[in-house]
Amino acid sequence: MAAMERFDAVVVGSGPNGLAAATTLADAGRSVLVLERSDDLGGGTRSYELTEPGVRHDLCATAHPTAVLSPYYRTLPLADHGLEWVHAEFPAAHAVRPGVAVPLPRDLDEAVDSLGEDGDTYRGVMGPIVRDWAKLEDAVLGPIPRIPAHPVSLVRFGINALAPATLTARRFRTERAKALFAGCAAHSFLPLTRPLTASFGWFLMATAHLAGWPVARGGSSTLRDALVSYARSRGVEFRTGVEVKSLRELPPRSLTLLDVTPNQFATMAADDLPPGYLRRATRFVRGPGVFKLDAVTDRPIPWANPTLARAGTVHLDGTVDDIVEAEAGTFAGHHVARPFILVVQATGFDPTRAPEGTHTVWAYAHVPNGSPRDHTQHIIDRIEEHAPGFRSTVRAVHSTSPAGLEDHNPNYQGGDISGGAHTIRQLVFRPFPQRDPYATPLPGVFLCSSSTPPGAGTHGMCGHRAARSALAWTGS
Image 1 (cartoon, rainbow, N blue to C red):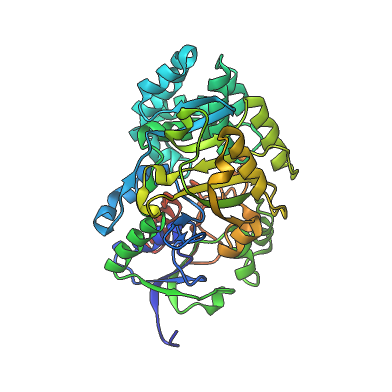
Image 2 (cartoon, rainbow, N blue to C red):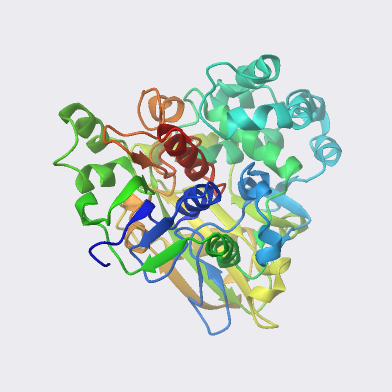
């Protein structure tokens, strides 16, 4: 970079939040430079030919309900830049045990019917969330508002969201409904006995009815490509292969937005941060990790229960008690016998990802942060339990350990794809209790990663809101 080169803003990191921050600033008339450590832009929205030529795998994020719901993304003409969403018949399904499964249909009435005697209970909570979503989305997908615009709707949601998922599951009578809810709540990566874990279950199930759990046609990189294309159309400049180890390496600028975790920021600015903030940033708690498996098969997964074949995302597996036990052990740092597993079968409804006659399998298991174990065969064996003959369909496999994910994206420390543990403190006051969750003690320096509100998810809201905070700081 030339010595005298100057930008209004420099964004470090090109994940969805870094890109959202950059476009928000550019749309406000600022000159913006984005620096990316990797040779490839996109953070968690990158696709690669990991197994065979012509077969596109999403290395991290693949199903994107929050991207469709994102209040910010909806303001962008991403379809004009090549983005197209595609849906499975069911957004998700939960495998309780071999041969027994419960779907999560996109239509609320269909979901109520599928839950049988628990349908009325489900509608009693989910109906108002779906009906009032326009009143809730700003609060749910942003910092906790000081004065909520729609207090009645928010309080109604909060009453159901504050409880532990285990307590909420007891409201259902059937094993199927309890397991379906627990599987969605397990996206919290927390012991399901903890307060607020119910919020993850209700939110994830609501997204199924509000937006589905679609994938981007052609792979998650097409979402990245659309965001980058729009950013370039607004004058944003990009430079890849630039690792920023210190803020002092950056060119002159008025604003700095960092798509990094607090731990990384502490390293980048250690000499300039006040001791108290440095201590909080260094102690920011990481969540459990994931072990990722990508496979190419010569036919769709041969599920024994046809419900699973109709779903985009499949949760493996177990009753509510099984999931509670697995998540508690994983959070405590133990390698449990049956970790929670997610499977996405994208080529079942997006055949553009692989040549005719081949299919992709995307899967990850919840594991302790930094787990050194190879979970490849365990994931294959678990799918085989519900899909006899699956193993014989596998042509090639690519596995990514927690360390491999962190090497791919340093934000995924120890395989933590959530930007930090969802403890009460780090969920309610993400990343720390302070007036502006995006600001730092350094003038003009803001965090914009998923370690800030509203947290993980391919929605860009962390970056967008951080950029708005930065613009407010400048008086704009």
